[in-house]
Image 1: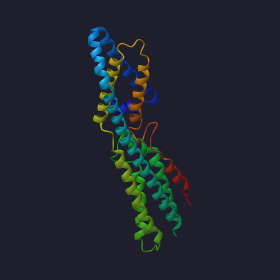
Image 2: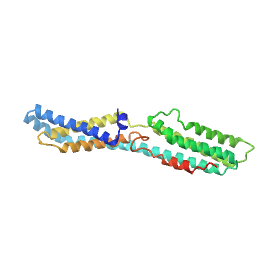
Image 3: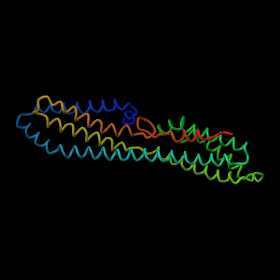
Image 4: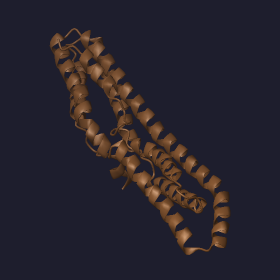
Length: 260
């Protein structure tokens, strides 16, 4: 459910939760006003006043904790993308200085295809967490094979080929880190706890406003709570949505590669 919500536009997510919290708040207020005596209402309002602070603090803590997890995942994924970009640039630089220009041309072409494939095809797999076989692996394997053949070819005395092979191993390592980060996700139990805390807080606010005529500010409170949960959901998947990993570093690296 939460994954489906996270795919919606930000405005839609905020609207859904704002409507939900408003409905809970006003429904609770209506039930208390209609089905309890004035004396009981006064008791409930007193109790709700006491509970209002702890429930609000609990919800704020859960939101803050969830945002810390999701933002940490996005930061780690962004760092992994930049590592892939920097390591591929190192391979490209070494390739440009190889003596065998025909081999250098083939390596540059493979490297460029590898970077483009990550941006155009791997991202969708990373977002769906379909990580068993990434499309870019084909070009990474091809790149390592080309460099390995050059490194072991006794007729080719090119130290740059051996160094490029080591750099290609770093590329594979960095991409493995990127794929492993894609497996991280915010525990569903934490999201359910956040929703329960928000619901309970809505009920408390509804009771507090039992004797208030025209408590329209409750809509503002529901909107603030909805925004808090929406912040968590829009960062739920680091590879899709409005707040996601920026792949521009890979695009920049691909444009810097010159195919001789």
